[in-house]
Each structure stands twice: as structure tokens, then as C-alpha cells.
Image (cartoon, rainbow, N blue to C red; front, side, top):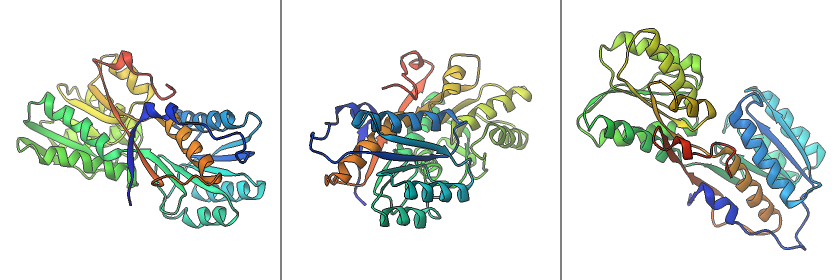
Amino acid sequence: MQFRIIPALAFLAMSSMPLQAKDLNGIGVSVGSLGNPYYVALSKGAEDAAKEINPNVRTTTLGFELDLNKQFEQIDNFIAAGVDLIVITPGDPVAIEPAVARAQAAGIKVLAVDTGVANADIIVTTDNVKAGAIACQFIVDQLQGKGDVVIQNGPQNSAVIDRVKGCKEVFSANSGINVLADNQDGKSSREGGMAVMLSDLTRFPNIDGVFACCDPQALGSDLAAKQLGRGGIIITSVDGAPDIVEALKSDTLVQASASQDPYGMAQLAVKLGYDLINGKVPESKLTLVEPKLVTRENVNDYAGWTGR
């Protein structure tokens, strides 16, 4: 599959459709949880893009709370409501395919954001391989190419797999880096990251660096290190979440995070989807958005998840 990589700030350069274009009357959004700031920002991006196209568009935004059956039901309800576009962050990128196919059979374009779905019409996600790579290159640079490190894994979706892949490629290219562990699942949560970190700190007398596959796990890892009185560990991750911004500005072991742009990714997906219903087919259905490394040095210049 061919794809393109674009900077996040390029979203605003996209041109609008001509006046005679088909109207966008309804859009449904199904995301992991509306209690998660990441999904709130993503939902807001989709809604704002839809309203930019048609101020009177009907938007329905729902969280499936990591219950795949609930996401199936939401998609079926969107189909029944006759929406033009459906934006999803898939609970399971393979299991969701039949529901995507049902929507497409009803003439609805399905846009997968954050995690890809093979049969989606449009996929917009972070270049997660690069995100993992730049976060782990930061560790290598800080350690001057020598030290004992841990790769803290997570749920095996495409985003986590790609982040770990990028990290491993960087560590493998530096012979002085010794990877102590790379297969423990931090469950994309603060509690999970803390549990894995407590285990690793107990197993290994020396850890110089930790790459956590997402920000909540990084924050949990920092708490674990403090609980056991361990310092001098460089922790990096991926997301650029509001909590990690505060961590970078305070006394923590977290040193960097490769940022995502959920707001911008959803905006782009809706604009590409609108192009699609008007017969404008993109060069590729997959767009990878370039991550940026947020560190203690540049965090004050970081616009955050809702930055335009």
C-alpha cells in the first residue's frame, strides 16, 4: 500500500470544495472513550471540520468505552440514521471490518483515525514507527550510545506495534544499548505502566532508560520509580498528552514524548472523506502524520492536542 507522510500543520492548507459540491448533512463519530482527553480532542477535530463544511451538519459523537459490541451497535445506528461519513477509532481493527463493510454497502464513507482498518475508505494515523524512533533516539543521545534500557510494550494494535518497531530499530543500530526487556504489556494505562515498571525495577539492578509505548504508561513508570526510590532513569513515550506536558514541566523522570495531533488528524480525515463523497479520490487512502518530539527544552512552545 502506498502512503504519504505530511506534517501535522499542513492540514490547514487543504483547499475547500466548490460551492456546487454535495452537501455533508450527517456525520457519526465512534471513539474509544469520551472520558479520555485524546478522544475528546479527536472528536472535536471531526466535529469542527464537519461544521466548517456545513454549519448545519448533524453530528453524533459516542464513546464505545472499549466495548467492541457497543461500537458495532453505534455503527449500525449511524447507518440507520443515514449519515454521510463515519469516523471511527477502531476497538479491534480486524473485528470491525464487517461493520465497516455494512456502512459502505449503505453508501457511507468510513474514516479510520489513529488506528488503521484494512477496508476503511480513508485512514489517517500518526507515523508511529517514526514516533517510536525519535523517542528512543532521544534516549540513545542522552546516554551517549551506551546503557541498559527497557522497551515497555502495550496492547498489540497497529499503533503500539509500529512504535515498538521504530524503537527497536534505533536501539539495534547502537551496539552500546542493551535491551533488558521488550515484551511486557503496560495496557496503555498508568496503572499498567506502574505495574510493569515495578516488576522491571525489581528484576534489574540498573535501568538507564525506559521507552513506554504511550504517555499513561510513562507516568505510571515514573510513579513506580519514585515509590522504589530509583532515579537517574530517562523515560520517553508517545502521545504528547496534557498530563505529559505537566510532567515535562515538573520534577519527574519523563524527559520526552513524541506528540500526536488527534484534533488535526480527525480534521484531515473528514476533509478527505468529504472530497471522496464528491468524487475526489486521494492518491492514497492512507496518510501518515509526522510526529514531533516534545522535550523539556521545547515544551513551552508545544501547542498541544487541540492546537491548530
